[in-house]
Length: 166
Image 1: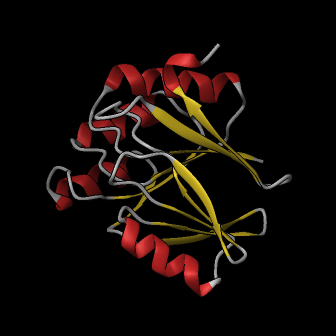
Image 2 (image 1 turned 180 degrees about the vertical axis):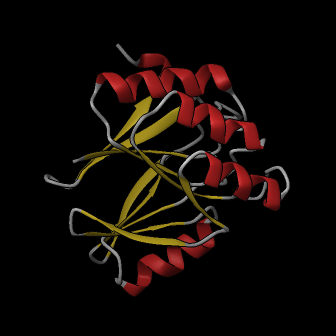
């Protein structure tokens, strides 16, 4: 299964649309969002334009938590405050927004892969047996807009630059 991972979308609906079109064309069934969605309406926009499963964390830039949780429930999105542990295709995954939390969890080797955001800098590194991945910023703030694709069958991780998509 291929999973799309994004972070720091910051209500950039143009970039989010391009990302979701890519997901549709490439038969992505699951999106992981590492936080900073911003407005609760962004959750609705994701759902209106993507039929698969969506998991995510808040981040540090968002509408009121109560409003975000209401929109998440209304839009069939599994949303946690800042720590989300899940297993997909037998792969142990952890989502967080913050780099320090992500690195500390990667060091435990309890997860196959830890995704995070916050600093808008795309990166992939391996700590022990755990991949530590920042998909960058979908909004394109401070750096080019990026996201990641993870294939649970091959364990391959690709960083994608949004304006280079074919």
